[in-house]
Length: 140
Ligand SMILES: [Cu+2]
Image (tube, rainbow, N blue to C red; front, side, top):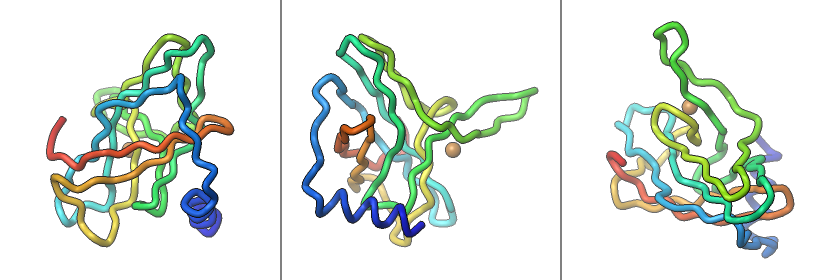
């Protein structure tokens, strides 16, 4: 946990945040959850207009202590989630983070997020970082 906090601090004060031009993120949103929810999920579309595959290796956020890469799938009729180490976005392709598939998962913050709130994510692609603003919504 300490390492994550340090990474966030460096992000905020390091001034080394660079936009990655071949990557474009659209429709980023966080699902509003009931006050009792312990976890929140975020979704987005990541497009890669470059000629090389890009790998999303981590995500951080000043709004959450921790952000995990997850995948939902149905195994033997049972919905389950698993951790994903990294996500590849193919050259000239896209990756959808969507309900029932890949998503970001965060422990719910102390202050409840409701529709209309905004959340910031930092997407880490190797040495490049991309800042993404996500809307809090009740549904896609
Ligand atoms: Cu999850």
